[in-house]
Each structure stands twice: as C-alpha cells, then as structure tokens.
Image (cartoon, rainbow, N blue to C red; front, side, top):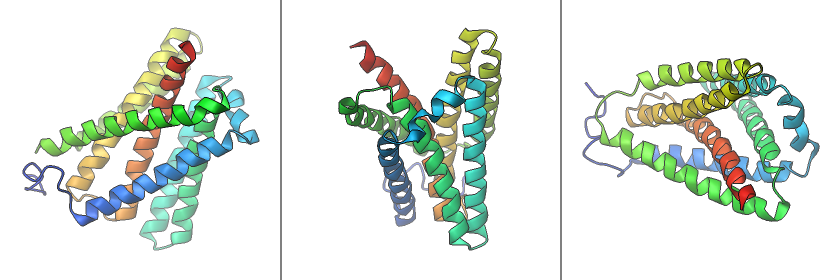
Length: 228
C-alpha cells in the first residue's frame, strides 16, 4: 500500500517539503549550468578531448566521479558534517560542469547561451512529464532504481564493446541516457512517498538525475544546431 495515499488526488499541489526539495535541486542545477558556461573559458573545456579519446575511459571516469561525489555528500549529511556534504556536492558540480563545458565548447561562444537555454527548456519538459506520470500513478516505482542501474551497466558495456564495433557505442550512450531518465523517475517517486530521510539528500538525488539528462539533451541540441 502506498505510504502517500493522497498522491493521486492532489496532483501537483505539492507540500512545503516538496517545494523545498525542488528549490534546492533547481539551485544546484542552475549553479551547474553557470559553471558549464564558465568552464568553457578554462583548460577544463579540453578534458573531454583526452578522456573520450577512448570513450569507455570517459564514461568510467565521470561515472566514478559522480558515484564518489554522491557517496561523500550522503556520508556528510548522515553524519551531520555539512563540510563533507558540500565537498561531495562540489565534486558533483565539478564533474558535471567539466563534462558540460566539453560538450559546449564545440559551439561558438555566441550560441552557447541559446543552446543552454534550449536544453534547459527541454529538460524541464522531460522532468515535468516524468513527474506527471509518477504523481498520476499510485503504484510503486521502487524497481525503477534497479532498472536505472541495469541501464547504466548496459550502457557501460555498450560503450566498451563500441571500442571494437563503433555503432554499439551509440547504443551504449542511449542506455546511459535512459538510465538517468529512470533515475529521475525513481527520485521523484521517493519524494512523493517521503522515502528520503533528508531533504538535502533528496535534492541532491534529483539534481544528479536532472543534470545527467541535461548533458545528454545539450549534446543533442548542439548536434541539431550544427546542422542548420
């Protein structure tokens, strides 16, 4: 039985706790987008060139950075050590900021803000659609965490195999993107069901999922803009 019996009846009339989580996640994401734009002007913008020279290396390095950052942040929050928690968040910001800057660096400076804006709007729409689906259904989405992890694993395997069969690499990145979508749905469900023990940890979880979706959307947006 759902631990949140009013979830399907109140729609998006979110309570103050949920709005606080949304606010913190939005702030973290806004800071990260600003860092992406700023990092383009720094040596960090070329990090992707080195890491993704062998795509599997880039995937593993960024994956490890995100995992370690989340673990550090979670440990800090649970131990009541805000300094440690912020250190974990800083690592997440650095990882996503560097990844995004590398993607953004392929576009002329005068269109980067436009690309970020379009990617932001699309990401917000995707988040809204997923949230609408989750809040409209009374069922459990707990398994989406397992599905997300499975999708990430398939993505890593696909990128690895892609070193020998290039077309498979593209499929691997699709699985990774899908993994972030599933992770976002799971995080939203956890907020709905009050599964998170900390508002800050819930916000970090949502932020990681949204940032993961955003960098993939940004890459697609830049590819489309490059064709025009």
